[in-house]
Image 1 (cartoon, rainbow over the protein chains, first blue to last red):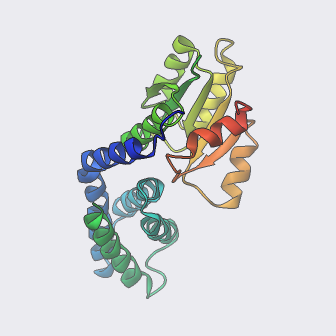
Image 2: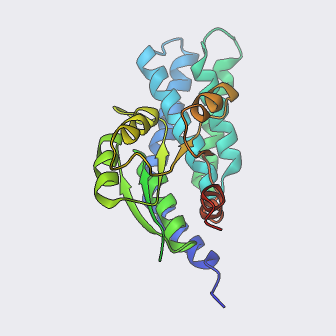
Amino acid sequence: MKPSPQPFLAEALDRLWAQFLPQLEERVGILEAAGAALSARELTIGEREQANSAAHKLAGVLGTFGLTKGTILAREAEILYSAEPDLDPETPARLAAIAAQLRAIVSTRK
Amino acid sequence: MAHRILIIDDEDDIREVAALSLETVAGWDVVTANSGAQGLVRAAECQPDAILLDVMMPGMDGPSTFRELRKNPATARIPVLLLTAKVQASDQRRFADLGVEAVLFKPFDPLTLPNQIASVLGWN
């Protein structure tokens, strides 16, 4: 009988996680900076597009590493940045909270 | 004989995880490209059995790459599966209307991705 690929796959995924962690943390950093800029009413169009892209990429990849909650949060951030994030007065706080939650999720995966 | 899959994605983390999944779980041969333009060249050179194509890429995006693949007689018949993190229904309809074999979604489960692809392509 062919051995299950699951243990080897899990180990290899852990290695890839470690390899790409700096890149993932950088994307979270973009969301943190954008959230702070939005709260200060200083978010530029370029920063907003960058945040939208970072959120999109995080939404696509976090669940692949088993972080489903991270994908849900990043997807919410992507939707908020796709719209006019400064129109709703509650959006800046929500985006800042999402960035903080994503930071915690990314930093606690073993 | 193992199937050969070409993965075209500009995001190196996604590309590597997908390659790991297809090689480890299914035992398929994997070729990768990090842009639409590179993907067109690799597809013609390697003649893969199927192409897993990211939608959002800088420069030539997934739909544009797909249209170029179809224009070239050397790649026109290779089945293409789009891979996207876009979940809105309007996006999904737009992608399905392109004529691809299937639209798969990110995030994917590395343990089940090969089975998803095999089911779509009748390789089971």
